[in-house]
Image 1 (cartoon, rainbow, N blue to C red):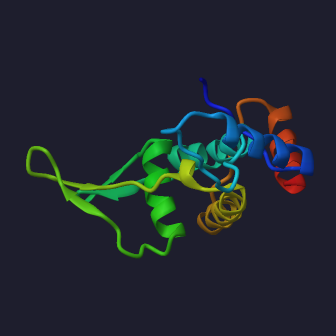
Image 2 (cartoon, one colour; image 1 turned 180 degrees about the vertical axis):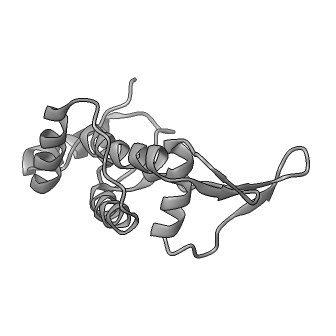
Length: 147
């Protein structure tokens, strides 16, 4: 049997989920959780992360360095979460590695909070988002305002 996902958006959907629970054999797992962020939400953060990458240098090992959008995402998500209990691990060859936070684990609500924080952080640092094409900017803004 393959994986089944039931967005609990109506009584009929809830009844379908209940029926499936009664149908599956022993050993299966039922997980109920907040729905995850959308593809559009995920895509909306990258113009800002790209802006950080292209417009700011960051100190790394005492040297001002250009970082990738993914590296800025590690730094910024840690700051978004209050830089509480950052996880530093010994590197494989003796260095130090900051273990990144995962926005993929954020539900829609938390991701919206992260996105608003990211926009504010960009404004604070004078970073403007970098869009691949002009019409995409309007689509992101319209989508995020509707969310």
